[in-house]
Image (cartoon, rainbow, N blue to C red; front, side):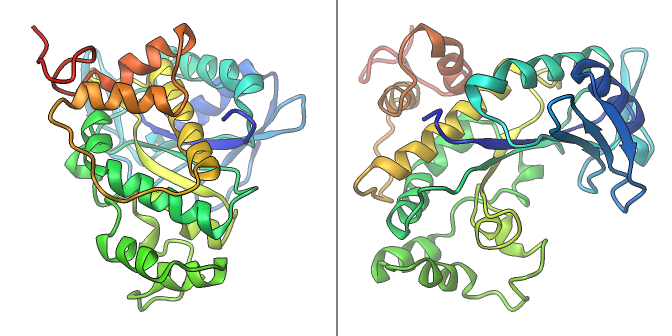
Length: 305
């Protein structure tokens, strides 16, 4: 599952874009270029030539700390870290340490801040794309509870559209153009629009058909339980995204039917094991991804004591 590259966007507030860019540049050993564009983008060119960005996002509720109290801040405190193309084995430590540096500098998140992970589209076929849609549809309820997606952000990462899922499974499209046609059915706006309404789902294929040609997963929180950006949780989200991508690519078929989850924690643990979260390396990831679920991770038909 680590053979595919990815990119990540992490929204936060608490410090200004100017300060966030300085922190990133110092850690990465890069230089900052101010574009002066609509998003006030700061580009940080690292020694390896890759470009990281700090830019604004209009959906972020801007805040800063006054002592221990969080209060309203100006739009200068709207920050989104946009990574270049990354690979897990080569870059996971870099992204985690950068998150820690930003947090130490005062960055934090609130319930308006999300994380978006863009997955390399190479190797995908009409079959694997339909698999991906069905996998997300079948796990909608479990994922939303496990990831604690707040109501405020549901507008930007809706659950899979049941009508779309039904159309894909009834018609069984054999070409990407046929899937693309189904994806945009029911929308009156031009599909070339960047902020097309179809993109605001946990699984976003608008980015696959336009723009960067990536598969985007949008259902991740930037804030942990205390409102901090958390390097360990971000690692868990990245691995989950890569594992889901690998499952869609390698599984012969996938059903959209929702599994029985009388014991949510057990259901999630066994599912994570099935898609690759096995062994000590992923212990923390399993803990992060099951922490908010009810039941027992060890026993299917017995609740936790």
